[in-house]
Image (cartoon, rainbow, N blue to C red; front, side, top):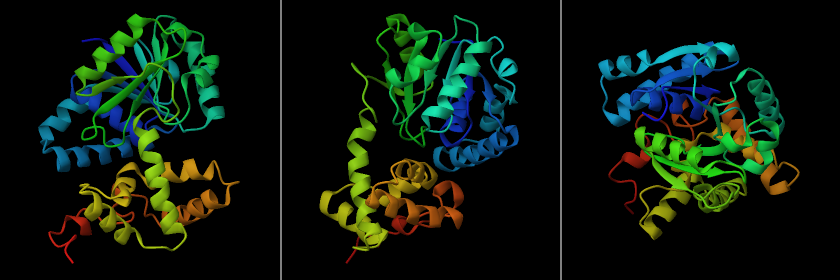
Length: 293
């Protein structure tokens, strides 16, 4: 294996998935999270989704969970003997900066550091780390067991050997590594998908049509297996809200953020919650009649 032990820092929606995916494929994993109890709750939800969508058994889950050896809010404990840290803390430059400054105080100099940031780029975060040659980004899509790409890009000083080792790790946890030649906010996937999702949210926020109608129109007209609001439920509305709320000075973005906030406050934040734009585990779009006239 590329690494004997890895640490996932931040066990939110994606962090918990990355941790379980790595453990499922045999890696020894530790988790750092400010609130360990929340990390445990997230992992419990991830296990249920894996069982439902991937058909794994209880024994598969137990085997994977045995590989998660710590869940702690102590950075020193979480990084003891680790060789690779993947940061997945909230998508905020200040929060990430504080995290890296604290992490680098306890992390041995030979440990590789990666960010799972969706919108920030390596040149924005590398200034907070003490090892630019061992720093890169490794971005995962939500529901990584299904949408299993991993977009990888370094900063100007990242060693090629570090990139190669992370590519090897991606393959070992059943990811398709996509190596970018230069940094790009949103990488490839989000650069393509965000304008499409923004357009759908804009139609909804302006009252042009409801989410189901928009999904049906897109799917019927393009032959796509998913509509934008199905995708948003999979991504999670809290992540989407955070992005739009960060640009709330724009009237259109604020209108979308306000409507998303209302749904989140009602507990309707996506598949994980059992309800978003659709109700789960049996959403309307699973019906054979969904696209019929």
